[in-house]
Length: 118
Length: 113
Image (cartoon, rainbow over all chains, first blue to last red; front, side, top):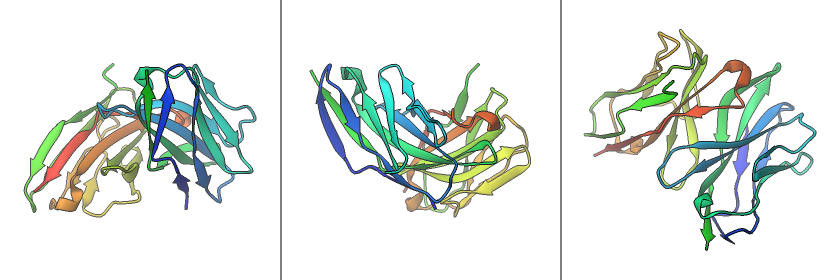
């Protein structure tokens, strides 16, 4: 069984500073995917970034980067140059991969609420 | 291209009533799934489908039925609503070959009294 742990219920950051949201995972699978989603107060789920377990480079998407440490089973999200609009709930999630296909069955963590102060 | 659509946006039911939450996508995605999100928690997988005619259970399937008669639609049926099913329901879809990109619908907020 897969498990995602997000130990920070809430985080605060000053505008324009960087922030790291923690995520650790547990799985016995060799092939898996790691995701981060943003959920603003309006409720929709917004995909931010994806990292495959065999990807050697850390994933980056604009101001988002995923600090993937496979041996530690961690997949922290780094947001650089925080903006007021980054205030939201952030979820780490994991998918099960097999035979080269990434199955979309996601296991989610409990989320971290990020508040960006002006 | 409307993406993933869900109807209704809000629904209030009485205990024991049944209803169907609708989910549709126009991206020809093989994979579709339903999640529920309880207050202060992450999403949990209810049911999923890898194509028309193929469905399977997720982590929390009890009290829900699904069917997939077309690629586009994946309705979720509550057989006899219970207060424990009060939640926000999200539908998601993706290509099987690109499940690293999941498209989520806007969600349905369901309250069972």
